[in-house]
Image (cartoon, rainbow, N blue to C red):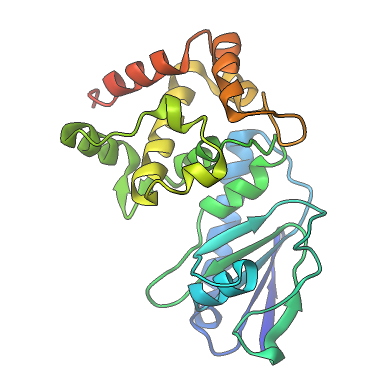
Length: 253
């Protein structure tokens, strides 16, 4: 049976007697704190109540949205789309079916995986700015708000990659299309994107970063390679030079 718990900015949906049902009050309190921090940092007045669906299995989400596989979390941050209105199930059973809603987050919450916090909510709220075609930019902002990957600071991961000689070239990865970006292991791409975003925000400031983030959107972009021109125009620096400066920044404690 699907249960619902309402707060000021969320409607949480979860299965009765699930792990989420035991923790729903603390989950709700945490997400409200995250919501307020994201809106305050991004200077966004988010207008919609977010529908938050908590699953016990990554496989159930993967099957519901992609016809297979496993997914820990995803965000529906738009009002119209082919997924909206599609009937899926929270448990894998027909009796727990529901229709996908606009402005909804779908996340795993069980004893081992608790996909809550800043990440998916940042995707939802930052869409008030723009929905950039660069997955690196999109995930970078969410990872910046997360601050860590597997409990370790994003910047520390990047120092490790640099020392090992396995650092990905951010100037190239930022310009990858979605199908290319997902080929990079997430344990490498996500913390690098988060640390790079922190570097750009600290170096150029929120307004310049926002202008760059919003410079291209899905409605009118031709290629993610267009970010090369946006970087020079808005940040006054090539993506390659920003990458080189980012590598130097990693050495600063």
